[in-house]
Image 1 (tube, rainbow, N blue to C red):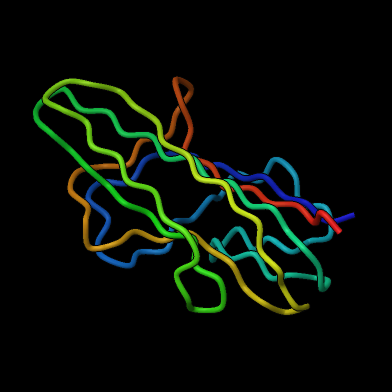
Image 2: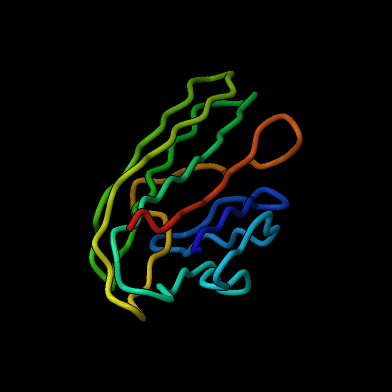
Length: 134
């Protein structure tokens, strides 16, 4: 059995370009593939995996926007983008299916299209999860 789910315990203020997001509060890590200190999942077995990630933005003082990518073995596999106006609180999520070999790595990072902070708290979390389908 392989699966993980982790959230950011606090938000990030103005993360830079290609910043790996660290989901440090691990809720589940069956198979021990997720590395909470680096934010990287390392496939413990070859197979088909599903991944999901959610990003929350909140602003009260002006527009903010962020794009994040799912990176599989240093290649962009999927991406999401979210823009919040002068006052707002929004979430965006991405989901995809990936064929991995044992030892392949997967993580979420920012792109150059970012401005403002990424939020994660009791009102809404920024999270990353995945599981082995077969």
